[in-house]
Image 1 (cartoon, rainbow, N blue to C red):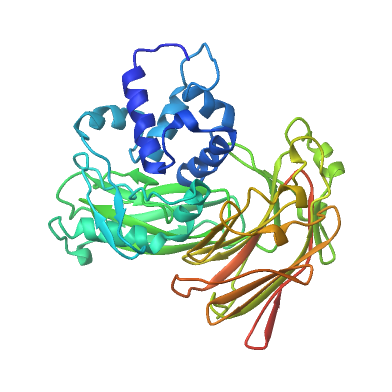
Image 2 (tube, one colour):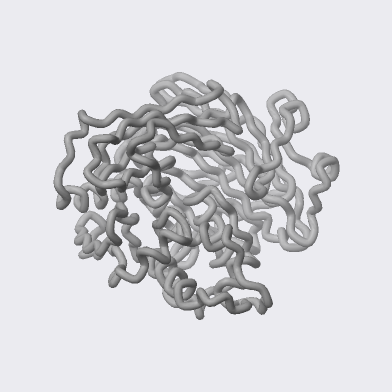
Length: 439
């Protein structure tokens, strides 16, 4: 990386990110870690930095140019600042990093924040083992994140939330992309520290003028988001924002805007699929690295809850060449305030798997997840049966794992399937209280 005079600030930003991740020194990071970091940064900021860009920034790859301002802004935003300029202005006064200590079980916490002036606290970085679960922790432990922020905010001078207003207006009722206008009144704030948090992640915030009343953003992916208005380090208003998918949505991840496939291109009867012929139509190559394909179906599921439901889908990933020889697949059941992530892979590759289920985290490094290995070039049936928060998972009719999850019950809002290259899904449905919801 070429020198641009900002090396000390860049190094401090990288150290801040390393501490936030809790993965240990970057000296021991491998390619897998940078792939995960790319996902985490994208989920937090809405900008995807490629694995090669991240490896160059961390000195893993030789590069003769200085990082772009877009890259520096994205890293600074993930670290908890408005942009790179804001980081440089404030980082000198940060003498410690917000962290959470775990004593015994995960419910005993001591939060010790040291914050830059006029900037709300960052999400505490929890040292979860193994490192594969850091991404899931951000997704699934939203209540703990909000609890930490509440404890911090209680130490500030309390503002009267009734003096503030906050609401959201979607430009279209369903589907993506979807622009949202945030209407707010924050004139009662004491300082100019007024932020809008656009997702569940407290670090993904945007500084807004307290004497203005509108802020707009584009959402490129469906999701259920708890947006917030923050004034003087205090959450004064919150508003749920639900971006639905308008039925099945097929896309290829790209930055900054994904490539959306037309409904008639990927949906046939009860099957949803993206095949090599369709990828060629959009000049997407399977080599050297196949595109990341995502299927979404987010909709109103009524009173479907995470503690008692049955879910079933039949899935296939028939591209098993090159870098996709392990055929990793993830099936996500998305909840209002939680996430379920179920892995599948080719049988020889079950040694690097992680299962997340509403606060329960299992890694193949210290548990037997071998039953999640399958011949994914053929149709593979996944079934989940959950009774009173006890879940049993089956792959092709064989019990793969069972667990009891710890998080509070929440509503289910949809599913997401993740492939590399090509993939297909059929016969997807939920059942609860005798009611079947077919997707």
